[in-house]
Length: 69
Image (tube, rainbow, N blue to C red; front, top):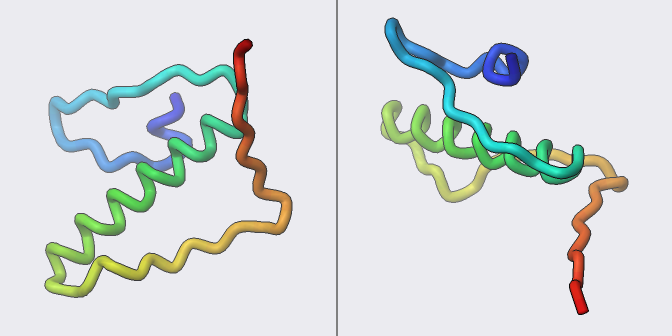
């Protein structure tokens, strides 16, 4: 379902592999990393540089660190 939502490129006979997350912030960060990796692969195939992705986020991006004591 999630692979379909993010339009994951699947070939014939291929299945999507996923991960589980606790929260939505973690989920969207993983989706962003997957997007970046797909972009890098596409640029490499076109012979273009992959060192400067153009990923834009809002000012409300959250990164949290849980500390267990």
